[in-house]
Amino acid sequence: MQSKAISIPVRRQDPLRALAMLALGLALLLAQALAAYARAAPDSFADLVEKVSPAVVDITTTTTVAASTDPGQMVPPGSPFEDFFRDFMDRNGQGKPKPRRSQALGSGFVISEDGYIVTNNHVIDGADDIQIEFFNGGKLKAKVVGVDPKTDIALLKVKSDKPLPFVSFGNSDDMRVGDWVLAVGNPLGQGFSVSAGIISARGRALRGAYDDYLQTDAAINRGNSGGPLFNTDGQVIGVNTAILSPNGGSIGIGFSMASNVVSKVVAQLQDYGETRRGWLGVRIQDVTPDVAEAMGLPKSAGALVTDVPDGPASAAGIQSGDVIQSFNGAEVKDTRELVRMVADAPVGKKVPVLVYREGKTLTLTVTLGRRETAEADKPAAETAPAPEPKEQTLLGMTLSTLTPELRDQLGLKADAEGIVVTDVADTSEAYEKGLRAGDLITEAGQVKVASISDLNDRIAEAKDAGRKSILLLIRRQGEPRFLALSVE
Image (cartoon, rainbow, N blue to C red; front, side):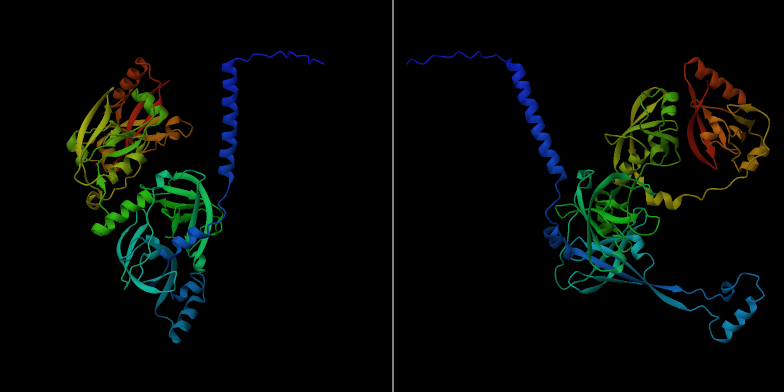
């Protein structure tokens, strides 16, 4: 019997559609693989802990403090029993203050085989004696090489008969939110301890000008201060410094100073025993959206110069009202970034600074000074009483021209010019922006003003130019600040 051929119709498929379907399938498989990889935790951190633990140390500091033995503190001030307790303490030889020894605990890590150790400044601040205990139980006495309170970093040195195990700094800028990290140290005086977590956030600032903290949920407690935060390669990418906690214990919000900040500080402490940061010599503030609009800037970025005292910037021609958009070839996003850029630059280096001025950009060359020297020479700010209010209202402010009496009350120099704010309406935009009685308006629309009529002229010019706001330069106790107020 002859077989019969069966014809099956074949539906032709568009090659492009088939290719698209294949690409979609591959993309889905890749996405699933990446998701599985991202979710997967390491099988164990044991190998990593074994590798880095010999370089992590416990730090015990001893400080001599004067004990408060004032008997008047045992009872409420003015109590009829105050004299009785004072006499009783004197008769028992307890009336005179006696020094006592106080101990504190912290952590640190060795960064060189010849005994350099990094920790927090607050761990060893004021200590008379610093003892280092190593993972193997050995103990050595340490000396302070240098400290930097601005970043809370201290560098110590011990003498050892043999090379010490040490760890190296990694690149904190490579760390991503979600990356695994290990915090190692001496929490609550319990001795060597390890906790694991992830990077929860980057670029956190607490209170310092040079803050660049990595936030982590790895458990950090008292005693962990100064200890290292490791990446999975065993490199130090942070120094555990602070926690956010309502009860003093870890709630999963810890902060480690980024290694790219710490390593630069440590290098200077090793070389000089102190920090040597670059200094530009300007007072600055962020460019807010309303300030950007008032100045005609395309975006709210850069650092707005509010004052230029004698220094490197003044010598280079930088002026109040300039917006620094680039420093040494790198874009400046805000004041915080500019401060870090300048601090990292070598003292004495000539750097190009791109500024925006009156609708144009120009590049100026600045020879950087040293911040520590400038801060040591900075005079203390003077306080000034608020003037009596007068009835002249504009933009929600009560204003007065600068009379000799007001100049004396504000403690201003004889050649000072401007308009005095004598009162600010609580519901006004000016109050919301921070203007207060006693402030001195010296510029409006980046033009000097000496009278209220000058201010009115500048406001009219802003309106004619189609601006929604006007930029004011305010001085308070000598400190300048720009802010923008609506003129509509």
